[in-house]
Image (tube, rainbow, N blue to C red; front, side, top):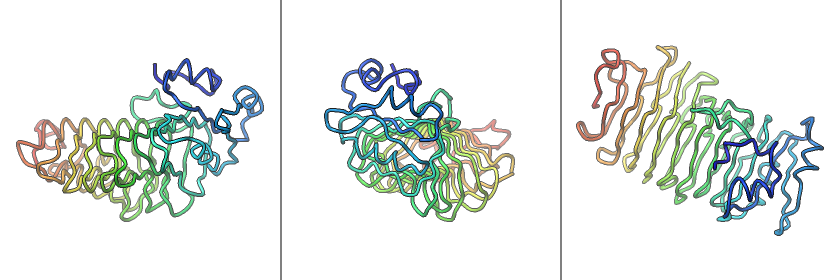
Length: 313
């Protein structure tokens, strides 16, 4: 039984959701609701409660995302808490910081039924010079629409924080020099997943890329759609020289030349990465780079011969 099989904000109270849907071992369930919702009063009546640790279940947001941080702050590291954010536009005035709260699930109340990327009923938009979300070990973020600030990443993860899961989100890429939308450095995200997300250009210009892994990361990057409609992108997925990643079944496109992607996937470490089954709607010779021929690459294809020929380098 999975959370995305339900619309918990409409169907279950917090304790029922906790016990009957999420199952044993789940911590507290917190909700964030915009104060402008027509059903706001009813929602408070139906869902508000105080947990045994003194925290409350429902947090009211005025549109700046502060209530999301309040719900995160109420969570406890390692307790396997859920923060469920109801549909709305959250214009963030500060980064959402999950530091110190491992095993925290940050979930949009719907939009997880899409095969790749939610349509964005809960929008997190950066309004200042900061990244949108700092993940913690074993954390999860799913179902959101992100609009980053030009030049700043949407999601980061500190060194030494392992095994997060970033999936089924929709990233509108606001481009800016030296910017990756998901930017993981050090050993952050090791043994984690970045999967089933969609990245689309929102504002044209120059951008470094959609996903970057540097340092000593080992992770799986699979089934993401990365589309650059306008402007220039250096590398859609960039892997550093010490990275060990499995990169599988991603689709990358420059929309027939409407935008420019200089390099689809940079394999980085010549002996540490494996690229399998990626499809790159990019000119011949720009699909993948780095790695070791006959070792790193299995059935990846760019526009060479209309995708008829696997590419090795």
